[in-house]
Image (cartoon, rainbow, N blue to C red):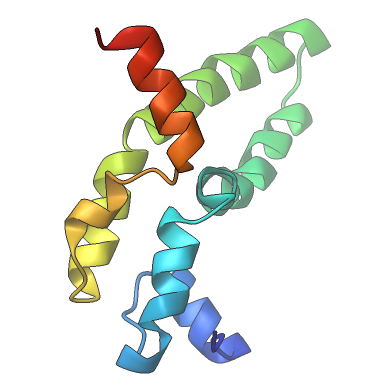
Length: 120
């Protein structure tokens, strides 16, 4: 699988479309193993320095930590809630099938166990 260059990767992370020869990498990045972790790091990571700036405000540390928690908890909740929408948008942006975001990779054995257990 071909991977993007550093410049292409930065452009991709900022929302640009990658060339067609990198679409296999895009599918792996958006739908492969560890996709949710990469997504969370991309969205929450750049915001962390702004939360650290709150520590420079005057006042008790409990107040500062409370402000950070009150901002970061909804950020994480909404980021996770919108992961599926973002994944589908990025697939469509690259001209790929948006239904790839719905498919989870289960082995045949896992699927049979699930069907036996929950589908009568």
